[in-house]
Image 1 (cartoon, one colour):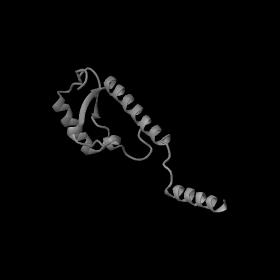
Image 2 (cartoon, rainbow, N blue to C red; image 1 turned 180 degrees about the vertical axis):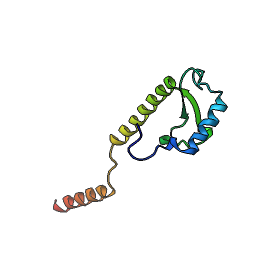
Image 3 (tube, one colour; image 1 turned 90 degrees about the vertical axis):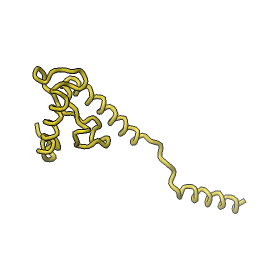
Image 4 (cartoon, rainbow, N blue to C red; image 1 turned 90 degrees about the horizontal axis):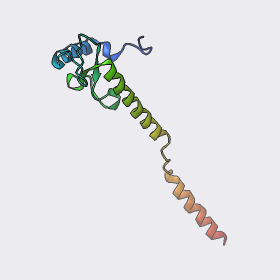
Length: 113
């Protein structure tokens, strides 16, 4: 099923060229388990995910069988969730005005006594 937000980055002619070069370089085998691409489906995988700063280059691509690719994708998904949760639940830093307001309140209390 195509993405609803436009064409996939990995369906471009440039990515297909990288995929073909990756198959040749990796010998049509899974980079993780060595599965033969003539017997199992291989996916062209970003070694460093684009979401984590990876690029669409041959240096950042490798062939993985669907089993190894699914396992790697699960690990990446968990890292992404952990990053989002860390941002969501991070302690809020005090606003710079908080210290000024606290000092003004302290000064007012001193003047009242």
